[in-house]
Length: 251
Image (cartoon, rainbow, N blue to C red; front, side):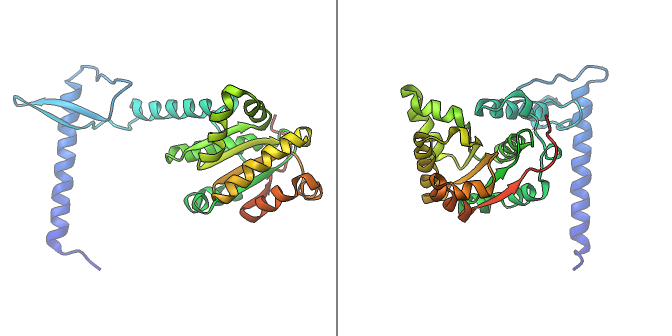
């Protein structure tokens, strides 16, 4: 369906006005050879003196190469990932670093639906296969979309739950976050206390439709055959897709 001629002309007129305003703003900001100031806490707006009055509008240089806003956003995002507990190695985890790509892409593509249904992933693979990189990428992806994320290296989680001062906050984190990332579920931690804690976490999140992503170096066959994990694995299989990080060690 073609737009009416007068509508097309009006759109073109507005576009030309916006372009002209943008060019005028650039000239006023640059002031000939004057260097344009750019503050780290810039909000993307500028105040421009013009014909005796002051006007506030979007900076015409916003998101250009030397704009600090994207750099600040990336810096804040890295700090958030660091505060979650990820090491420096994983602060810049991106899609190119992870595997298997297709399954992760599908999960993130439908992230909102997966979160509303309490769906997650169990990421299996040998040491160095990139499992933690998957978690860091998912954390970055979710944080960019203002989704609350919790992360814990499982041995640390147990220590925090044993610590009287940290126990309450840790329990709240495992229960309330929309996306919980649990790293390194291995047989070396599978004592009775650990199993009971792990079972409690998974049972709560299952009952409240909270999404959980777990990494493990154990195989599906081992997890299914160990009676200590039977109920947990049944819960996970119902709502979590099992994916494998295959290939040579990335370390």
